[in-house]
Structures are given as C-alpha cells and as structure tokens.
Image 1: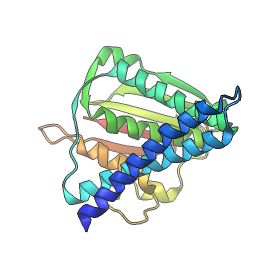
Image 2: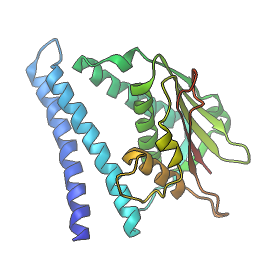
Image 3: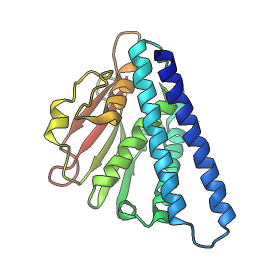
Image 4: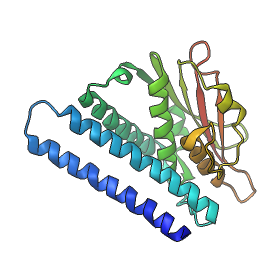
Length: 232
C-alpha cells in the first residue's frame, strides 16, 4: 500500500504538470490580446498543487528512507539568475489573473558574494524549490519590500536569506522551528517549512556538518519575517 501511495502522489504531480501545459495551449488558442484571467488562475492553482505534491512526496520518501539528493557543484550566479527568472514568470501569471498585490512589492537583491564564492555543491532543483516557496510566501505577506541575499556563513558554508516587512511569523511557527522534518502531522509550521527543513538537513559534509533552516522576526521593518537557509 505504501508503494501505491507514493506512486499516486507522483502520478498526480505529473498530471498537474501536464494540465499546466494544456492551459498554456488553451491560452494561445484563445488568440485574445488580453490574457484570460480564468485560465491564468487555473494555471496558478495547478502550479501550487503540483508544488505541494513535490513537497509531500519528498517528505514521504524521507520517511521510508528512499529520498536521494542530486548534489553537484552549482555556479551560483547562474543558479540565482534561473531562480529569479522563474519567480518573475510566476509573478507574471498573477498579473494576468488581476490578483496583483504582490507585484507592487519591490524585491531587493544582494548577490555580490556569488561572484566571490563562484560555485557550491547542493541539489539545485530542491534548493530552488525551497527558495521559490519562501520568496512567494514573503511576497504574500510583505507590505512594500522583500530582500533576498546570499552571504558566506561564518565558519564555512553559504546562507540564503529572505526578509520581508510584514507582520512576521506567528509565535506557533517559531516555537516549532526545530520540529522533526519528517513529521507528517498537521504541524503549525506547514508543509512548506517541513519540506525546507528536510532539504536543509539532508545537505551535509563528510565531517558531519548539516544544513539548517533559521526563522526569525528580525527581517525588514519593525518585526518582518526572516527565512534563512544554510548550506554547509
């Protein structure tokens, strides 16, 4: 039965990805100078559900010991450029729906250290997934500004940080920051944060140094949220 559950999640994720492709085709076939808000909303929902299934499947595989990361050297400037291009694409979809509050939010970036560090070893697909999820969450809760930065961590490693000027994380999330990443119950931290903690912890050095997720309300403004992903 466990194998069937994993297979069903995988098949549902692939079906949603295919649905997204057909929604794009439907948008083109409409041949209208004004994109259809209904189709754009459908595409956004399909994308969100597909992402949640990716996270759920990773947590499931971590639980049964079958999760494997594809850790390879990544050129940081290229990685960040790809990530921002994907974020811009998803924001453009929201513009088509007419639900555009987050598009008024300014994203400041500080990637200067990427040229200095040049490359780092991590699973690009999963780390990008974590960061995009965090950025989209910051955009939903920010008032005017989000800051996305990369820094060299003291003692070695790199740290991606995303800060906003919203109301910060609820105390329930901060109290449960160290909840085990494979816990599948209805945790107050939510699926996305459980997935992020899992992916961070699965990045490790031969010396036993593991990645980690750090959350705080010392972001922008008075008590904005700060999401930091450390990779050893």
